[in-house]
Image (cartoon, rainbow, N blue to C red):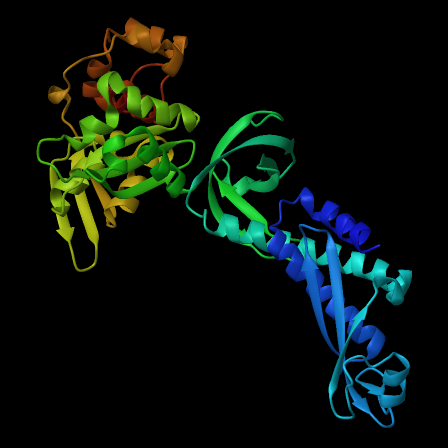
Length: 415
């Protein structure tokens, strides 16, 4: 019966790949508790488990007395003599007796099986928790097995990983069966087992991708000094070379952009600006706001505030689409940036725009009306100004201001 029990217990843990010593320790603990259930809480016992032989031996230690007060811890001298008392033990000495498993009955054996199963689950949870806690900050590769409304479930080494909506790259599509890479962000303990949260939106994921694709970063020759990122839109990465012979930005971009393009593809075509880091805030802020050309930079290092002055046609480059560029520049530099616009004189515009090219923006009727009144280009209209335009039949002051604004916007976009 001993062999059958050990084998049944072994079967329960074989799939979990638990160590034999761990299993033996669990069985010893469980049968120790069974002894206390049968013989009382004060019972002294020793459980010996041999996993190789498939054997369990349980020994109960009791004191020899004249009159038994507690059968779980005492045995009478008369009972000892009836058993033969081969060692000729006397009152006051300890008697060690081997207990057969069948003496516990099937109810206690089944209880032991249930306890073992529960213990294994607890240990398995701890193993998974500890394993992934050590992997926080590392990239894992798994298979998507369920896509839900607010999260994606990923299978990694038969463990469930959770990609929350907040950790996903916006507008990225996930399909069941796809392979996915993400960084382990957090591991939380819960009564139902650990929750392993992975992320593709965290800055650390981008950092790890740089380490994978760029050997100089992995080797420490190039150091990432800072990352600012809006997942799915744009990222700015400041890098510095510890070797004067190596160009940090060039190494990150790679020949024909092959290295950076590999990262961009992984991030669902997120634009990445790689910037040379410097401790000089004037130069660094200028690099953070590139490709915009700045006229002047004023910095208050104590308050971490910066005012930049630029031509009106450069403001859209500084700010970027939906303000992304300036927000990332502020995150990366650590400075609050204010932009002052310098209006550009009409004579400073390098190129003009023919009015027929602006039919979509102004509308065909307005373009035809302007051409009928001897205007051929956008600069000519801007030079005329609101006062001249409102003299044209069909154009009031409000419409004239709207035309001027639309044309000014066109020149900003062209630049």
